[in-house]
Length: 323
Image 1 (cartoon, rainbow, N blue to C red):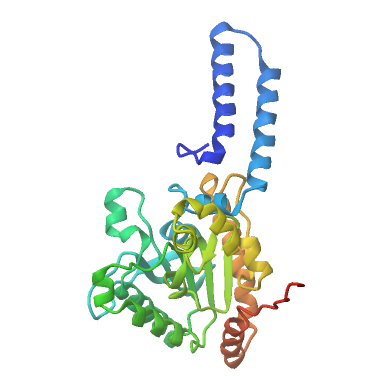
Image 2 (cartoon, helix red, strand yellow):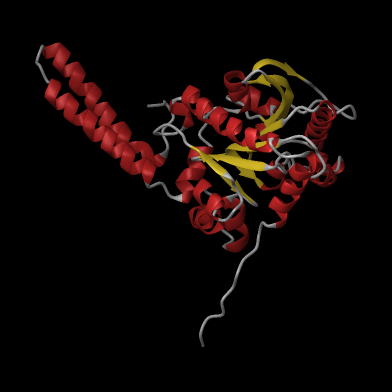
């Protein structure tokens, strides 16, 4: 069990503490308590399966924000080789909230780009807590255009609460930077796959997410607004975030049911942070499968596929209530 425990995971922690105490007592007193330990181990497994299989949307949001969850750089190290990071937007500066560069994925050159969070105060300040500035999106666009020019597939990893909304971000035209990325992304001739690995928040996620395939980890979320932001607007109180998360339909299961996401990548029991290597393996297999499908298309088919995908989003049928 990780050192950081989410509120709904406390029953598991209590059982694990009880098991540790029992083992210590058994060793100190030289008493064979193997059967009792096995019973508690079985109870722990049952509790984990019950909790993690029945998570509410708000609990999934909490899981997506887990500070020990693998971030973009972790997946780059796990699923690619020969990664060469490229810096700067050639206009203002290098934004550390978005990282990217050329790498080899299963021996094939790709352009991999993603939003990056920090593990501690220093790295979080360096990465601006995963909230990109306009120059981050302009850097991403520069790298995506480079990939398109040299025929390399684009793989984007999304994990951001949203673009940075501060004054300096507005002064440097963050809305325009994201809008240009959306427009240009529809024209790329190469295969383009996005993976939501944690938080997929608002236009901040969409700025590097207009792709042929949107894949999402089992306990990640993808939303037009954060649950807290939605609650603050609709109920004037962030305490209603759990209710907002349920109504926003932001979980991986909801997104695939509504035709937003194309595939769900399974996570180990307890979340990606319990076994990053296994999660990365699942991610690589899913990306490889969809990349093969996109390789089989012509350039015109890939462009049309991307356009049709986003044009089909947000179609609903309404039925009037009976008087």
